[in-house]
Image (tube, rainbow, N blue to C red; front, top):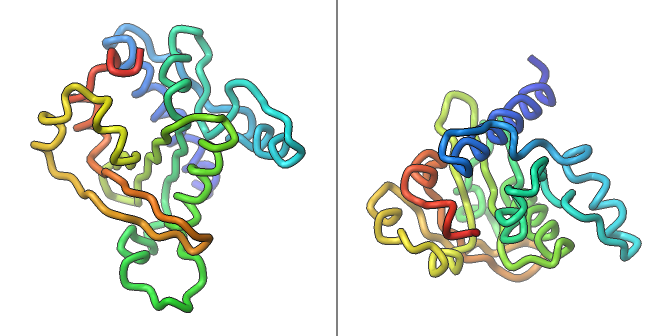
Length: 186
């Protein structure tokens, strides 16, 4: 399967999983891929125009899902097995922007353009589990934070080549689904 095909299929899979989590397993169609994976919103943002519901890779196809996307934009990345989150930690100061820095830059730009406070980056490398990254400050809004802390996780500060830094929390996406209630975002 072509790289773009893997990414598109993974985005659809994540949308079905998010929908099932959001509806307590009742539906798999509340979220779906945004128009051109957010390209329409990105293009319009460059000219100062906003685009409702199209920031990031995922949109709500049913209004019941909109509260989640009113909280954060979601970016989905599949593949990129030659790259790792740790590339940002051990790079030389003079190194070019690393692939993961590009991911974080993209999701943070989507967040800013959408006028939101938070983002989520969902990634899966080949033959690996799916991970969820989000701002550490988001943990204060999750009432099951203590349960989420009990699963394997990483907390890190990410310095971006473009300037600034992000404090991120990372866990398995399934752990997020198992331990965080959608009620935190409604």
